[in-house]
Structure formats: structure tokens, C-alpha cells
Length: 587
Image 1 (tube, rainbow, N blue to C red):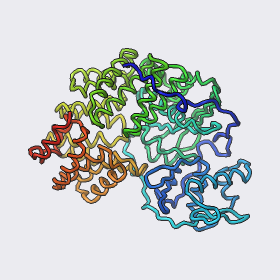
Image 2 (image 1 turned 180 degrees about the vertical axis):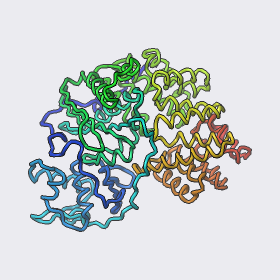
Image 3 (image 1 turned 135 degrees about the vertical axis):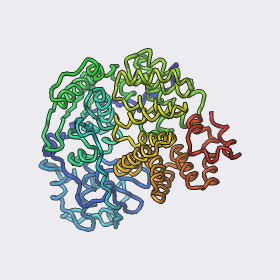
Image 4 (image 1 turned 45 degrees about the vertical axis):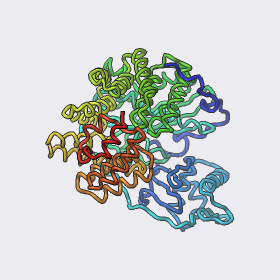
């Protein structure tokens, strides 16, 4: 496929930066590993007016839109909210937010101004943050606290060591390297999945802990890991400083740490060295096999296409149509600059495959997924992601036997790659190979022990095979995992939507309906939320309401026809004229 020539570079790729870097955690008066815990009395989130604040991760929301805060401003808001109705002195704020670091009053004033701007507040007539002259500040709005939501304890392997990689902190002068900070952490996650005998927490879970000052012991408890990788990035022009540390969550002490000061073009060498050092340390110094060493080394390109690639990956995970289109533009931009960079082709193929499967089933998307995945595979036949993308594209063509070859090759290259088993399992189910889908969803659930979808789909397949006790156990595991995800991120529409069906199956009808309602309210045009809502209504006997939704969704061409053909939730309406008419619109 010829990449688009209309991809603009202006504004997409960062320009040079100037100015002094802010201090890293290591020099900011915070002991390594012993970071300020979340207030013990705080709930999962607090609401005031149209705003909602999540103290654990410092995220502020206006209705359904996130308002980006700097880490220090979020920490200031966290303390003010914790002490709502009580004046907080400047000295207390400095001690909490800038521990053991000497800063002027301007630093605090800047944070207060940032918060007032985000909240639309007025210093003269404050609704939220009131200035106490020569004393400090007071949060004056009434708070509505959610019920304390302590994430259920994860059920993990008792013998396999486990690790989480947190998003790196952006210490760059303009704080606009978030895509690179996330990308560096995600590349490290991907590399570490190649290591045998090591469980790596998924991005979707570990990236919930973005906030500076997060309690690593809580991270370890929630994610079921013994070690955490965290770090910081400072980029100014072509100069790059990466500080990284591997921390034991039980003791807070460093197992390994390193600072790299290189040119940006050396980023791949930095990544390779970090991955190898972390893997060896966690494994107690044991040598890595040749397969593992190959897996730790990421495919290389030059700086500019790599920036496009990382921006593409950042948008890809949001799984909304506008974000997928953004990912497409970024991957195309990377390919324009380096047409031999296989990861960008694999990413582009995945984007088009997702657009085809979830948004309209356009022939153009299917063709482009096919072409891009073929190029990715030809450029890098040893890249597992390329084979997953190829298998995904072929399964959408219903060329299941060919898709199987590539999914199995991906799993052979990286036996711990979740996507290989998950997408293979979906393809097997869509092909009517229900027993094989059980095995594949089971393996997917094993290699990514945070994933809620695999055990829920496994339970559905087991139920279809009449293995009711096993189905119930898998479904309960899916519920537990969904609850952990929703506790970490109450706005995860996929967890709410899929989890609602599992809750209904377990007999929790009212809670199931609540989760489904929340998913649709949050994402009213999301196919997953709508179809799972329709399935829930079918199970509840509300056929007309379900058919209203299905006509709306299928009428847009949204839906995976071969999946719907085998999904037992639709059995009760397969002969209904309205369903038949809507189903005929799917490709």
C-alpha cells in the first residue's frame, strides 16, 4: 500500500526544546521506592459540581472529558481535597508536594492558577479553591465521595516472578513528551514479554498508575507484582536523558538503576540495555536464551519515523474511531519516512483491521489491512506482531486456515504474546471451532492475568459445549478481573460492557444492568457497549429494545458477522424478521 502523501508533519512531531529540566524523583527529596501513599481515608474518586477527581492517580474529569493536570498541580489538588473545608498552610503544601526541595512561592501559585483555570474558578469569588491570606488555601466546595473501592486481590501465579512497568515521567522543559514516555514504557513491556518465567503486567493495568507519588506497595498489591520499573525522560532537542530504576515493592529498595544521556537516535540502544538489565536482574542473573535475547531487541529505525510510530501506538489503545484514524495518520507518517519499518506496517494493518471489524466493514479497510500486514510480514518474518496482524487480517477475510498459521507462528516467536492467543481465539470462535477457542482463550487468560475478556469468552464457549461447571468458574474469574479493572478505571467502557454479561450470567441482574447503562452513557456510539447492551436485553427478555439497538448498529454495518452467527445470545431472535433484516446488512 502506498502511504498517504497528505500526512502533515507540522505539529505532529515535536520540535527542539530549550530550558532547564526539572528535578527527577531521585533529586526531588523523595526516597527511591518510598513514595507518598494515597490518603488512607480517600475514596476511589470524589465529585464536586460537574467535576470528578481521582486521588489515586491524580486525574481530573469534567463530565466525561479528562482535564490534563501537571503532576504537581494534581498533588496540590489531592491534598486540598483530602482536607476539604479545612485551611491547608503553604508550609504543609510545600512539605507534601515538594518534599525536601527548596522552591519559591511562585511554584505553588502557578499550581493554584493552573487548577483554577481547569475548574473555571475565580480567585475573587471562589467556588472551589479559596485563598487564605498569608496562610494558605482551602477547598470550599461540597464533596460527594464514592464508596471506597479497593480493587479485589488479584489471583496470580504463586511461583512466577511478576513485574509492572509504569509510564515514565516527563521531565522535559515543555512537558510535551507524554507520547514518548508512554511509548518507552510500552516498548519495554513488549520486550519483557519474551522472557520465560516472568509475568509482565499489561499496559492497560500498569498505566493507570501515572501519578507522581504513587504508593508502590499499593501498585504491587493491585497488580500482583513484586517489582516495578519506573523512570523519567528529559528531552531537549536531540539530547535525551533517561533515568530508570527497578524497585522491590515490598522493601522500596532499588534492585537496579541507571541513567542514560545520549542522542535521541540512540534510543533503541537504551531500550535494549534497559530490557536486558531488568530481565537478568529479575531472573537472578540467569543467562537469557537466544530466543529471549532476540525478543528483547526492538526493530530499529531513525528518530523521526520512530516518533510517528510511538504517537500511533498511543492513540491505538483508546479503541475509538477518531483515535484509530489518528493512529492511521501517524503510522502512515512513519512509513513515508521509512518504508522498511515493519512495526509501523503491522500497526497500520491492525488499525485497518479494527476499523473494518468495528466501524462499518468497509472493503477499503479490509484491503489495506491485508496489504499492510503482508508487507510487515515480508519485511520482518521474525516479528511476532507482524504475524498477529497478518492472522487478524486473514481471519477477517475468513481465510481461517491461513490465519491459523500466522497466529501459531506469532506464538512460537513469543510464547507469552497475549494478542496471538486472544485474536486466534476470536477467529476460532467465529469459525465455529468452539473447543479450540476454549483452549486459546484459556492460554490468553494465562499469559495476561489482568485480562477480563478471555475468561468471559472462555466461559461462553464452555457453556456452549455443555461444560457448565467449568464455564461458571471461568465466568467468575472474568467478573473478578473486570471488577479490578473498573476499580482502577471507572471509565473503562469495555470492562463495563463485557463484564455486565458475566455479572448477569452469575445472577447479579441489577448490577449487570447498571454496568451496561454506565457503558452506554459513557460511550453512546461505541459498538461494544451497544452490542453487549443488546445481548443483555435479549437475556432479560427485552427483545424489542434489543432489536432497536441491533437495527441501529447492524444498519451501520457495525458488527462481526461470523461472530454473530455463532454467538448464542442471538439464538432467541434468529428467526425474527427484524433480526434477519438487520443481520443481512453485515458483511
